[in-house]
Length: 271
Ligand code: DGL
Image (tube, rainbow, N blue to C red; front, side, top):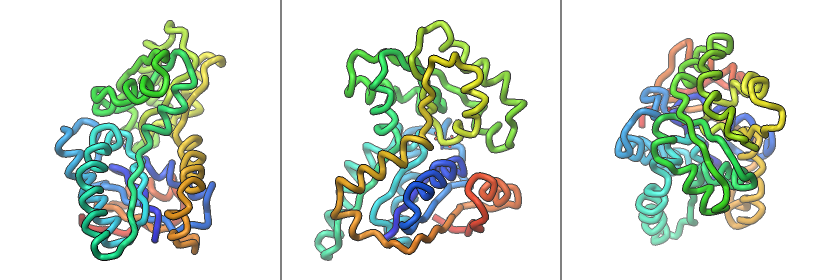
């Protein structure tokens, strides 16, 4: 069985690359819904439906034993319902056929665990992630004393996809400004695309503020998860393969995929 990594588009490749680097022995399938990206401004229902279709594809067509939803918007707006409705039913049906249980994880809880170590935290994310309030509620569950400040940063996804670090500077300043006088101890990047601006963001924030970036924390947390879930780990294929599946491909998409992940050629699929 393989490890599936799902994102609304290409941003999740930054996390996929970090996961593969930390655990190169496993077989990975990355699925990016490039035809329907961005999810950030869509309704709960649309994000749920799209995410469910991707989960179905990764389980049925790619035989994934476990899927990481790298997309923060999907983790915030759809993951709980996917786990409670879709996954439970999927596992119940497959159980009758003698198949082992599969699992779906998100990136929000591991990020919240990191945020909960601090007293005052800022979170940047898409409109969908921020308006869902999932980050503050997950962080508060772990540490009720942590004060969370959130700010949506909608322009950063198109700017990252256009590879625009210089043009992004005024937007980064605008999105970070509300955090500046809040005596923050940490700022979390709650979106797949934002690690692309990590160096620029670090330069803009006071040195005392810790930057929480998912490409640094998710691989470690996932490794721990596999250690704790030996039953899942032992079923995972270990040939070190990777496949990148996208729902739309253009020369520009291929270029960005290779820039963010490496030379693996993306394959076109239909969900
Ligand atoms: N993958 C999304 C996220 O992490 C960003 C892109 C989008 O809006 O779909 O929130």
